[in-house]
Structures are given as C-alpha cells and as structure tokens.
Length: 399
Image (tube, rainbow, N blue to C red):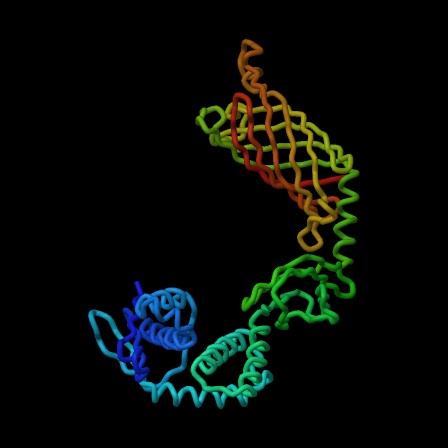
C-alpha cells in the first residue's frame, strides 16, 4: 500500500518536497502529489488550518491519491527510509522546472500536437499535467492565466474525444456518420466527441451497411465490415428462390452415438436418404436411414429407419440474407418421426415390439453452390428409445 510522507521541513519552509513508496516510480508519483497537496494548503482559509496541520494533510493526501499527478521534475534525489524509497526535490529545482514548463505552455499551439491519435492523447495528458503544475505553483498574472485557461480548455475538449477506424473490404467506400456534415474514407482515424453515433457505409455496386457505435473518451475503436456486391446478392437470391420452390434429394453420411451406449445403436455409421418438397420456408419429406457399426451388408446392418420429416428453413432473417460469397446459406430446424423396422424384419417371428419408435429434433444448414446443387450438414437427436446423437453431412440435389 502506497504511503506518502511529507517532511516537516517541506511543510514549514517549502525548501524541499518528499514522497515515498515501495519503488522509484511510486515515490515519484507520491512526490508530485505532495507538491499539489502543499500548494492546496496555501489556498485554504485560516479556519481550515486551525483543524490541525497533520489531519488536514492526511485528508488532502487521501483525496489526491487517486489522481495522476505526473510532474516533470529534474535532479530528483532518492534515499532509503524505513524500508521505502523516497524521492526528494528542492524548491530551487521546482522553480527551474516551473520556468521551463511555463515557457513551453505559453509558446504552445494546438497545431503542434501529433497527428497520430494515440500519441496526441499522450501529449495532451502530459501538457495538462504541466498546466496543472504551472497554475498551482507559478506566480501568474491575469493575462498569463487567461491564455493558459484557454489552452487548457482546448486540450480537455480534445481529450474528451475518442476515435474510430473503419476497416472495410472496399477502399473507395464512403462512410456517413450522424451529426457529421462530411463523409469519411476507410482506414482513416476519425476523431469524434464521446457519445453514441449511427453510420452508413456505401459504395457503388454494393449493398449499404447501417449500424451504430459508441465513442469513449481517449479510446480508439476499430470497426470491421464487409460490403456485399449487389451482383453477388442477386446470384444468392436466384439460388434461394429456385431451391425454395423445388423438389430435393439429400444423400448424407453420418455417425451416431448414444449416451447410454446401447450396442445396437452406438458408434453407428449411417447412410441417410431423404426426399423433400419445398414450399418457401417450409419443407416436407420422407426418408430411408440405415446404420451399421461394422460392414454395409444385410446381416451386419442393425438399423433401417423409415421417417417422415418437416423443416422450417431461413433463407433470410430480418432482411438479412445468409450467404458465403455467392453461395446461399439456408439454416433450418426441424422434426422427424418414424420407425426403425430392422429388428422386426430380421427376426423370423414378426413382433410389433421389435419396432422402435423414433422422434428426432434436427438442426442444420443447406449450402447452395448452384441453384440445383449444394451440401448439407445436420445434427439430430432422438427423444424416444434410441436417444442417439447423429452428425451427418452430404450432398443436396434439387430439381
């Protein structure tokens, strides 16, 4: 825990200032705070002094301990005292630093700040600390104080700004930002006052993107967006429209496991064939699904499922079309029910209790490379006796 010590000598005669801490950095920070505390003491009324000198300083030191008071000081001496490192600077050195900083501030122009945002913010913080130092210790006249106050206000306004950079795949895109009366280009640092903004990114031949962002003081945000060409969206739209009005054949290869590891359904290789009729976002169909954990021969197979399937597919959601480049993406959820009849037909004695009921939930996506050809990936889980988990993928043909 940092401890700030101000020597009796520095309080009484202001001949030196002292600050202590666990290392040089902490000691130097404590030293700069002790300077401001000492100066603040001079500005208090006589009544406050009567409350007790040391209790007054303890109160001020506590209130100042959370602020960054980085004073640029030269010829600081370091000594060891009671297992701490203490930084000490004389009043003469303070006066020398004060004169140097005052000259710098009086001659400084806002245009001298670095162009780079991060470097600019560091420079502003450094200058504001110097201004605080000069205002606290300098014997300024009215004219000097007025000019320094004006500079301080300009610097604080700039410090209140943040920045945003748009990383866009189209270099000549134009960016419009709310409350700003000009457009901006990608990859440039855009400085804005802290607050909430909306923006629109546009480029000829590409779909506009509209969104919002928040600027925080002294922070830089990066926003990455990809514009999609109108031609690409047209191709996606053509594939989707054809597919959602077509008949469809899915052939998939999959793998199944069961949570209770029932041997007849666990670790199963599967071949699944389904036929669908698409009605926009709805699709209905049926399928034959088979499985084995050894070989694809009649005697080694142990699953033969007949299922009826229904799905809801989402070619777009809230006016957003799903796609990867010009390939259409159609996520879906669904349910399928049916029966596994393999044991029923395999046994010589036909018993209905050898038929296993199936009710599975499904989730997946169709990826259309061409309007009549694509791929499918799906996860399914049975809620009845099998309780299997199936991951499958395959080809999709529609006509």
